[in-house]
Amino acid sequence: MSELRVLVIDDNPGDVTLLREAFMEVQIPLDLLVAENAVQAYAMMRDIPESKAPDIILIDLNLPVIKGQAVLRELSDFHPWRKSRKVVLSSSAASHEIAECLRLGAHEYVVKPTEFDDYIELARRLGCPVSGSTARFRKDASSSTIPAAATRRVRPASGSSQFRHTT
Image (cartoon, rainbow, N blue to C red; front, side):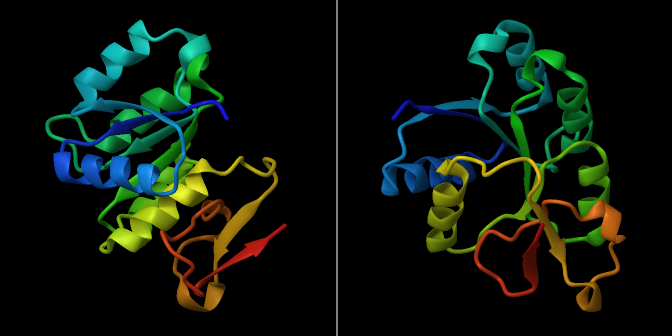
């Protein structure tokens, strides 16, 4: 199994450590890159060639100075990393932020886990091969004010029943 190349854009070293430990726990070979802010992320975009592009980019929204939404917008427009799976990992569960991030090109929006077991489940899920680009994850209409068109690939960190898989 080759290493999963993951770029974490997050200024909280505790969250980065939890992610690293969760990937180790599920025994997923990992090449973990870390950018503590947007400037570091932009430098990596400039310096890392397409052949070494991250498989997954985890983006925190609450970055210092330049917010995660701006980084997500740049990543979505950055052709050499177009195949990278962009996952917003945020403490916010606000429907307007979820909708905005999906509109900006996020493949998923995940609320940061509060328990280590949920980090392990997230690492396990992210480490599995993506099963095609047609998968859709939608929040049940009865519990959401998010427009259905904006809820593609939204998924909680753990197996919450408020989300269902549709094809």
